[in-house]
Image (cartoon, rainbow, N blue to C red):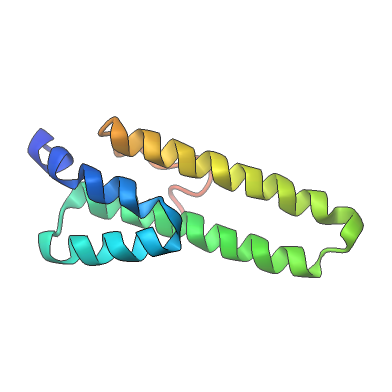
Length: 103
């Protein structure tokens, strides 16, 4: 990706990591522009949202004594969000650890 594409898509990429609503907003903002950098980060953010939903479902089925597992996964999700935002700010298109290359 060239520097112009990265600069143009940086704001959309950052917005995509800010909650599920931010992901939807970023998707529609990028719908007309078709920016490759923003699209990469939108896809990474979607993976985080899917992991969060899976964690939420998991927490419903775990007994109270094992809820620490869901909490640890939740903290891992927070770390992935922060890492994604830092990558977007720095103009990097690196896949997130563990979930970045799934799909």
